[in-house]
Amino acid sequence: MTPRVEIIALGGTIASVQGAGPGVVPSLTAADLLDAVPAAGGIAHIGARNLANVPSTEIDLPLVLRLATEIHAHETEGVDGVVVTQGTDTIEETAFALDLLHGGAMPVVVTGAMRNPSLPGPDGPANLAAAVACAADPACRGQGVLVVFDDVIHAASWVQKGDTSSTGAFRSPAPLGWMSEGRPVLRGPAPRRPALSVADGTEVPFVPILKPGIGDPPHLVPAALEAGAAGIVADLAGGGHAHPAWADALGEARRRVPVVFASRTRGGRVLSHTYGQTGAEIDLISRGLVGAGDLDALKARIALILALMSGGPERFADLADLAWRPKTS
Ligand code: ASP
Image (cartoon, rainbow, N blue to C red; front, side, top):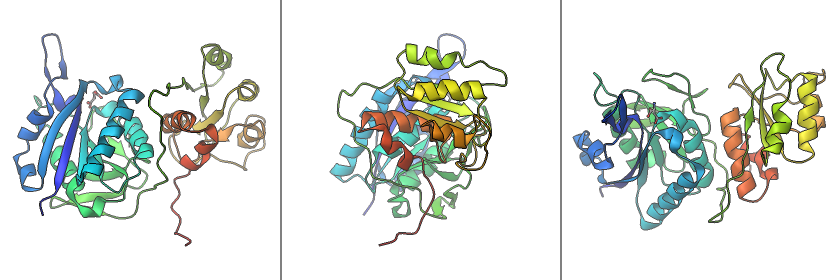
């Protein structure tokens, strides 16, 4: 039976053409995007609609929560896969948030474009064709939310945007797979955990990321609390290392709100028991801070916000551990 795939478009470069003013702006519809990929009709019966048409910096968590609700409704209706198109600048956050909210086996594939349709060799149609192929393919079931770009398949938990303009802007430490002759080839299971559920109308807490450079005084820590922060993500040096003055300020903040520390290297796991100086990971943990595990600061912020919205900050540690382990039962 021909699979059914729904495309939900949110805007971004893939949909951007010259507007009335300078530069391109999102304006093509989901149906326009689909028209540029006639071959997709041979892969699946496709429905296409817009939930928004915005640059990705205007996508907020309430919109992501609406999108997650729509995705869930499509899965309940028997749709085989959903493709989300959006701006690339925030995909690493939105795809991860969707992944934390998606408990089903139906593939959800996020894609977009680095070159807008007016440039030579726009990548949007190829990315959309690959995303539809992944959404329709049983091999991608049970893998949570995927980000497909430049014929590489990334798990939403790991993917990062690492370039302003390259068509290969998306990276993971180890991509989940790749496209071969129009079909997905996966090399392993993506990290998954039970989905979070957020009650309708739950307010999105303010959780800033604070990233000190050398010699910065920690003035922004009390300022964040003053501004109403419900949690703080500190994006620290190396394996999770702060100046003693920052350690004091963050430890003080921890008396009021959860404080997570991530690594500004954006690679590797934060440390837990290696360095002994004041402000290093052992000291920070003894002050009640929690390491971001495998997550960079952007993803740690999403995980902490959704943990706060769905039950409590103690759920954060499980969300931050992306290590693969064999099933024991
Ligand atoms: N450069 C972006 C994109 O690829 C713009 C955005 O994120 O909306 O779509």
